[in-house]
Length: 431
Image (tube, rainbow, N blue to C red):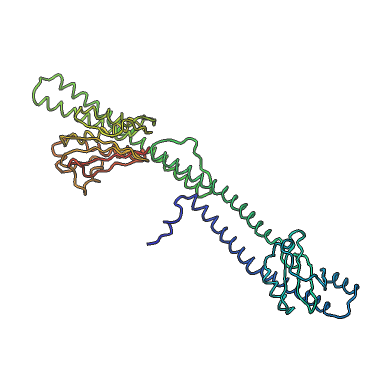
């Protein structure tokens, strides 16, 4: 099915330029066609008729038996031309009259219709004088007249002015579009930075009123989200602090008791509770304190995999420079590897460096997750009742934190079927 968008530019600037230039070119083409095909053609036809009438008057004079110098001079002056009733026989010299003016066929038709004899025409390129020669009885009449009386001269000036004016309008439009598109691009860049948790201190609303309103809305949204994140972090930090105090007391009390199986189990429960509090606080803080920088992603992934032992295989390029928050990305990769290692015996990491993004594939040979439950796995604190989560400790925040990190960097995290038979977690990060 044909769609206009398949053949038009996709960028806003290119589309705006097309909207400006296409009508200008179309109007210029239609005006030029009408001007030359209709108006100028009609003007030249009228001029040709005028010259034909003058030539018929000269023909009538040359056919008279009685002629005088006074009458000859009077006709020259009144008709603003020069004529000779007894011109030398023979064709006009092509070496001298090398150029035949435009619309000569129109003039030839008008002359032959009016005079009743064939007329030879030629234009002298040196003085732009038109020479007409035709038989009149035994004589050969030659008329010399200025070209501008026969042809509308300098018609190209109209097109030149139209082109200059069109270029001027296009230049103004380009300047205007540059300003407007620049404002939209700045807004897009700032919104992308805000979405990744970065501040743009030099961003100010600019451009048209609609663009300014959109920029103010983005700034307000960013401020509200920042305030919400700060409140959430403060609340969970307070809850974590309040819970750590009784946990510490309980640990101290257990440490003073005799070592029994029940005491060991209670200590393990307290350790799990401390770990959960740490993960909750990490989820609330997000990427706080981790500043963006340029680092080697391949080294970071291999370092994260090394923490689980030498059996984790990492394949891919030796070096992949990216820009982002290294601690957050390392935590995300660690969560993915840890999640895979809990449910599988073989875990493999592969790095794929593409033209616009880097893919980190974490494959395992575990039981996997049904495709219809993939999105459920990303919900905070969600524990699936499948083989992957039975009798397995954890808070259900690993995949949530990893996807938040990926999307904060402009990428994403997706789940799929692994070549090893289990689950594949694909973390994509833009360059």
